[in-house]
Length: 314
Image (cartoon, rainbow, N blue to C red; front, side):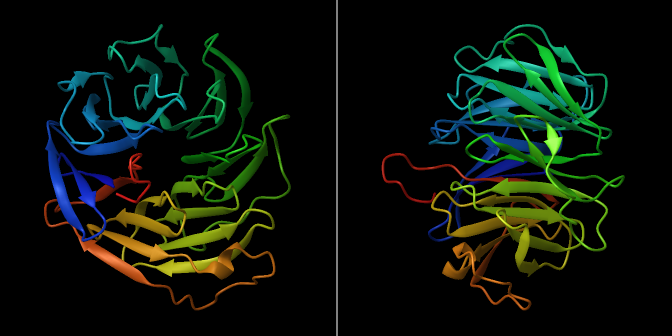
């Protein structure tokens, strides 16, 4: 697992014993975004000053110096499914694409006209979804053209693995979860509701089978949803807001981090995968917290990498 923090570092973890394998240094401001390539060989991170660093996914060693990628904070980054391109987005209102074999910009920057909070490649790698304060935009990167725009305040995004649905989590103007049909770019049904008492849904993640969604917010809890019927089947309580969340590679665990400076691991019971499961009003699930003494400030991002040699969580 890789985490990033506003103490200007990243940490590479061994989840078997909760040990830090490597503290990754090189940024000069809060590290607000981190992502891992699908093959686990590359890590990329972006910071508040707009600097980008690429790292070796196995060793945590830096592959580049801190690149001056954007003029303002990098809020999000995402590798293409084939790991050949990295997309970065920023408060400077641009999308930039980077070739991962040279770490040079691929094509011209795309100015979308609004501050960008999140970017996610479609499973096919053809489309980029971006979230802004006022809308969601869908870009065909091959022609640098916006092919769809949905007017809704959004902060976080997640595609289903089959690419038929895009899920969005709102910001303070609309703190709800919405589902979008990617064949028409129309909303599917009503909004999902969201997190009672929240103003921001900071992060969304879909499991590898496309059956479960997990969401994190400033309401101090994490919610586990079944996508087929939009039912909340678990609520995991935290003491402080949760900023980042992910499923483990084997799909059996949820890991999240936030203002409490810990990574918390929650196990998902078998019942969560069954269609006749109703809900767990008082959810009792195995949890482990990893204290991040090396990251004394807010934890911004948590991402899994897959050990391709052994197929284990790392």
